[in-house]
Image 1 (cartoon, rainbow, N blue to C red):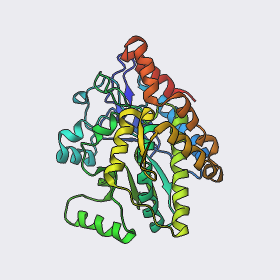
Image 2: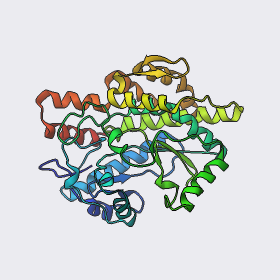
Image 3: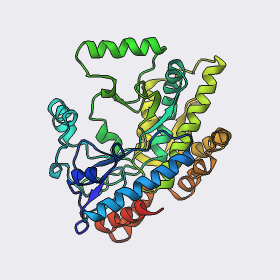
Length: 349
């Protein structure tokens, strides 16, 4: 979020920050008050941590030179989408032309994690398998309780806001890489989409760069939470890649149950109960998170990411970003105080 230092409202100032950035480091997004930072491909999350902390420091210093501030969360607590300007890029103008209000009101901020894949079939298996983890990633990454100056009543208001877009949410299952190619080609050849990047599902193969991309969590205020979620996604992907190598098929779960679990996670965060699909029993989401941490920690050790991975314990023990936002706001019912806290926590090393 690009912020005015006096009002702490969003500022339509992306062009100033892009001019200061190295090529590819800082990018515009749909709205001029939003900036995207992206690390280069990293060997492990330790390297990603170094890159991401440097990027956050870079954009903070750049913003200060232009009398601006930077903050990170899933939504701005009191901003109105009607006050924001659309970026000048052709892709964004096309999106607004096609989607109208649906695109204009997308005043949300997300965390995207790419994990490199060895081959296309592994990528499809991993993408299919990650579907079952979307609810817990939603809960752990919830960081958008406030919307348009009001408590949304949700841990992640970003989830239903983005749901207005087409081609979002729980992705379809693909039989194999040939099935994926055939189905994407059908949509492109029919003129429904320009290319596969116009599919904005929670998980998607990204063949242009050889990854599976997870787009589930809200943008995180604290850098250590960003890295913890990235390490979790990487460990999940490794477990599924090894599962593919074993030749075992994935279990088939109802799409509507996956979607219901995601809704419960968005509504209540770690305070929810979701259905444990293998047993069909309700389980405390926080307990499920602890079980996943225990089960996947060995994968994180093998990947060299265990230090970042253990940052999940701070979320599980002390609350998500949404929980922490509510603690700050409820003290004095002051949204400006909350945004100042978000700015300070975003700037922490």
